Structure formats: C-alpha cells, structure tokens
Length: 196
Figure 1 (cartoon, rainbow, N blue to C red):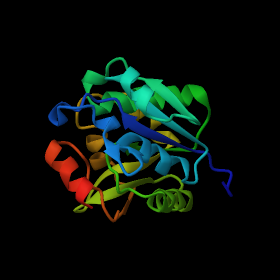
Figure 2: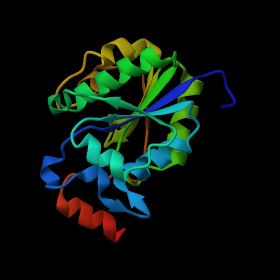
Figure 3: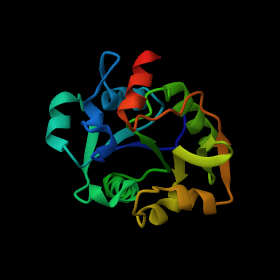
C-alpha cells in the first residue's frame, strides 16, 4: 500500500449454510467457487494480508478452495453464529500482527468487487478513526472496515446478528453504497446468482 496504514481483510466463511442444504462455500461460481471468488476479490484489494475464518465443513472446503496466500483461522464454535466468527477472527489477527484496520466481509456476497473494497479502504484512510460500513437502506452493515480502537469490542461478539448491534450503536460511521450486496443464503438465491 502507498500509506503506512496496515489493513487486514477478514473473510467470514465458517457457517454450516443450513438453508442451502449444501456446502455453500464450495458451490460453483464463475471459474471457481463462491468462497474462492470472495478470496480472490479480497486478495487483489489494497490490503496487507487476507484472513479467512473456517468452521463447519472445513476439510471439504480446504480440498476445493485455493487458499494460497490466505491465513486460515479456525472457529471451533462456528455454531455460535456470525458474531463468534468475527470475534475469533479479530482475536487471531491481533495475535498475528498489528493492524490499523480490519475489513470484515462475507464469503457469500459474490458481486462485491475489489474496487468497492478499495473505495472503503481509501475512505478509512481519509477518516482514520471512523468505521466505514456498507449502507443497507441507510443502515450500516458488512463489508465494514473497523479501526483498531474497536477491535476489543469486536472480540466480545457472539450470535447470528454479527456486528449489526455494534454498528448501529456507533455514531462515527462513514456509510458507502455498494453496487450489489446480494448474498447467497438459499437454493433460490443461488439460482438467481447463476442468472446474472
């Protein structure tokens, strides 16, 4: 990166995708899989390191997805929801190296682009102490880039709502509009994705 800011990307992919009735992370998408697509997007954005939280179906996912250059974080308590994956991921990253910000993204939003992630990173560098989050009808959500001062709060998360409560309680948030935040939760969603 052109700045002294150190940014990590944390891709969340530990869930069992029960509504999908399949291992969502390894569903075919473009020339690879849903998860690999997210990892490639993360890797080409302007960051210092990409991490990925795995939990359910870890072995099958590792057989089908290329994790070259990615640090894998194991979440043994993946059934405690998205919040737990964020907490485990942030804690592991803090033990890995000192970062100024961590960009949290999902492994099942196939249309989030590296250009959008770069826009978030640029906004974060301009605003420094603020959270940069994606706007969902005015409400902040992920992808979201958190400054170091929020890390300890993130390590306390648990449950399915992820960082929603934390984001909605914060005042210093810069909200950005992503072109397409569609996420794949069900077989119907997956059919729609394949039609794009």
